[in-house]
Image (tube, rainbow, N blue to C red; front, top):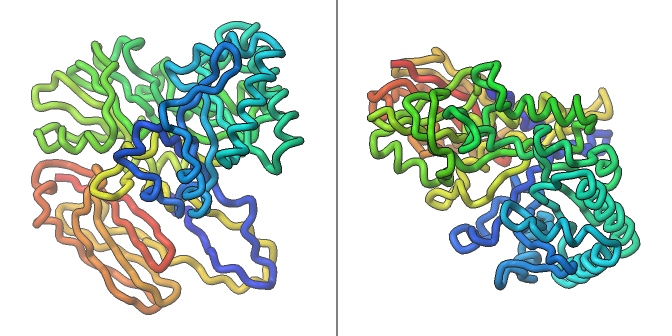
Length: 454
């Protein structure tokens, strides 16, 4: 069950302090989504940092970007909304310049000077690097030198300049990163805990399973990736963000883990509801803790993440005491004006540090549970309101679609129950499914998972 991570936000003068306790929520914002997902619609009540993608280095150390990408007003807008923005260098297909640029002290210095000039002029709060990937010991050493020299230069030019880095969560490419040395100069690492299956695998596995399914699958999972970075490579957990995939992959296969061809077709999350509307069936893998869908002919399937799996990954990040989560990419979950997957991260955003036993606490309102669970087709949802609030209790399906608002009213402090008879929802007639009950009470929110079994 989703562990509720939204905890008290009331501060008093007798010792309650918000610690370094806010979890990072870092979202990559590619230039090509800005038209369909304007920066004004990004939700900075959830997001903490935006990685503006992509710029890239030339062989000579010049900084190159997509046409018209650098925009002072965009950065000002993010700052006005309480967020931080970093300029991201590299990405798949934009990394060819790293090897020649880092190969000499002269070209590294040229690049560093250009980076500093751009970040000063456009008011970036830092830079993120996504070289995919260094491939030998020479490139490993040169990459480390670049980061060392950039840190030394920015420490004398900026206050609190951020340097972050996307890294693979496995040894195939990860062996070419000197993580122990980089960790002394990099503020945090964005673990690319996705793309575990694709054209390079011989079966239709999950794109980003939380756990390997089957358990002996050699292609890995978020869990094996985090174990690699923390246990094998020695990174501090607070320096690592768990990667979240806001996209899915299609395979030509008869079943999950069956032999396949494909894996090279990707879909943004907001493209996936159309497949379910066309009769594809929704499935949940209890081992991997992620969904997939299959066409009626059982010849194609798509592996992806939905609000439930995203919430479970946030829970996992909390349990492993990671510094935060990372999203590739913002805008891919934008449906009818809502960031459906980003909203599933909301309960994870804040934690709090209690520094006194004498503090008078005002607890958050929260969902307790529903019973029965699993249900068919009626269930009762229990929740608690700890202070008078505007309350909204809403049901969403696994695709993030609004199903029904059960409560929309001002409610006094107390315990409440509400009964949901889902017979009016046609999805309950078509088979098993996962539903999310989302409670908003004032500025607080919490989520529970409900399972319908036909």
